[in-house]
Length: 466
Ligand code: CTP
Image (cartoon, rainbow, N blue to C red; front, side, top):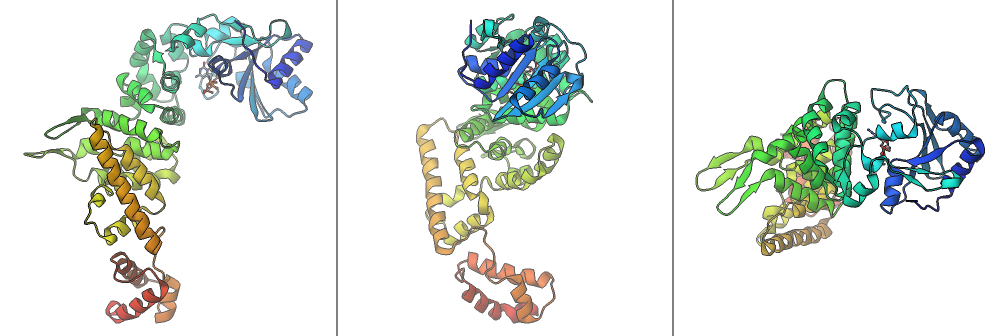
């Protein structure tokens, strides 16, 4: 089989290879994606012999500068136009720059391909003129792409031993392409999962990076379920795995919290590509296992799970090495995920609506997206009824917001002014004044306006200062 590409850079690199008498190949994800009908911007070029020298030759011909050279890995990187072109020498050792086992030994094309992670990634295509596009497929990768199978080229125990991060990669590719993991490969994943978290083998950053990429696939439940069924989730994110043991029982349903969560994540993924909103969906019920209690006549209850869950986030962020700048956001969504539910009733006051809007602030829209995704009933009538409820809440919020522009709400009379007016030093009492004004506005006692707030301030002055 031959692949076809109109990519001019690849053709040009092929010509340079011809002029230098070098055999050069496209390899890895670019070939895979091309066969699946998608041309990417990450181009991996492999040469038999000195890949770094070839990279230097290419950059010279293109009049560009090489961005980096990794001698230990026989790799060089060139950013050119919008392409990221990586040059590698055919090699025998592991294929990942982050891996702790750097390459030393160069090898033939065949040897190199055999040491790659999966058959679908072990394809190469010549870019030399005489056989441009010809695919080298020593491990039936084409067939596996066709059939949708993730399989290692060699004995999976060997392939995963070379780089245990490939355990995560297998799941990521399965989730991304909705492929199934071949039995023996899956067995090796299950048996070798402990290697992922063994001290000093794979860094937490790399595991987390793969995990988040799984969360960014179109249907993350495919990957998350594979992680669970292989026991990998229990190793890397036990708090999620623990959700499996919990039934949310009431008179009609038995709902397993883990599978409910997967559904919520899938739901939200049809609405957003925001990683942190997806992450919030993943963890929104995370405290259910530790708050569950059986109450006679009611069933299982999970009192305060939203608050306990929010408080679990910091430790989880630390452990997974997630960016702390996203902690507040995720905590807030977890903490507030039940709040909009009771606001759908007809007799809800403006002030209750205001409180939600003011507290959610910038995250209001995301919160409602999460709430909608949280509806996982199998009964379509119920689903549409619950969705309508949120439409109603949203409408009410808009109405009230229009009335008093409550997003990023704070007292219209600022702290500085309060200090100046009453000749006060900075201190607690300023906060008390501001809080009282905000409360009065939220309760609807006064409008959210400067004049009214100042008048109110004068009214409560003596009471507060005494
Ligand atoms: N590779 C490998 N083992 C790894 C990492 C990478 O064998 N742990 C090989 C695979 O052949 C892979 C190629 O190196 O195709 C390039 O790796 P990478 O850029 O990480 O992934 P891609 O397959 O290109 O896929 P994607 O860009 O979608 O991540």
